[in-house]
Image 1 (cartoon, helix red, strand yellow):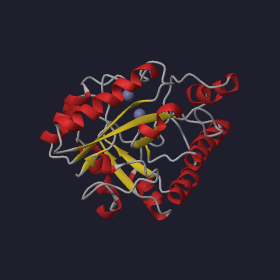
Image 2 (cartoon, rainbow, N blue to C red; image 1 turned 45 degrees about the vertical axis):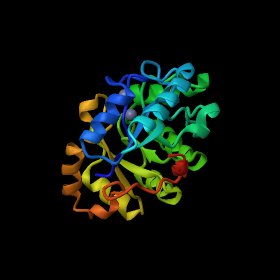
Image 3 (cartoon, helix red, strand yellow; image 1 turned 135 degrees about the vertical axis):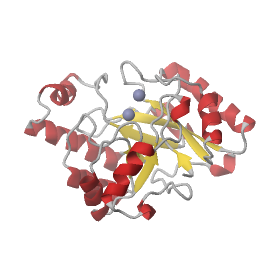
Length: 250
Ligand SMILES: [Zn+2]
Ligand SMILES: [Zn+2]
């Protein structure tokens, strides 16, 4: 595997520092790692806005200290509403190399009326309105923002997979095979591939020792029977639709 594009540190609720994750990535033989702590509207785990400058400085320092690996600054943002808003902090958006986005419970909604979007996934998980709201949140967010990777699609959140797959394929947003939990069944991966989606395999490590660990999703991928070429981070860095990475800086 070339790079792991979804890892957490103590800037959200991971167990290690940026340096710990970088060292683990080097030890695992990776050539690239993204540090993607939770977006600021995650109630318990979100990175504090005032700490983002430290987060970015930490990453710059690690780039100087470990030139043998490419280190990307990122964020795992949250879907905030069916209208497609996500909690990518505007003031730092230009300094991030990669944007991952996923559905998480325990988010501070933007507007009172969006409480239904979060409560629906807790109370009426299988309700039709919940499905429509979730699908709108994914599709509108994909179309309105340059989301590079959808993290653990369908985890805690039912969606119309065809609608989301079509939007992701059109926009070039990669579908994540998540190493912390299997969120997509083999037949769902096959359907997404038919719709033209491409994939990325990440650890979603919340502890340094899990950086680069993709063992659980590997077995699901094998069950799908899909070719490895559809996974974009095995031989080199994927093409991210957000095109934020400024490699000349390195
Ligand atoms: Zn987390
Ligand atoms: Zn997540």
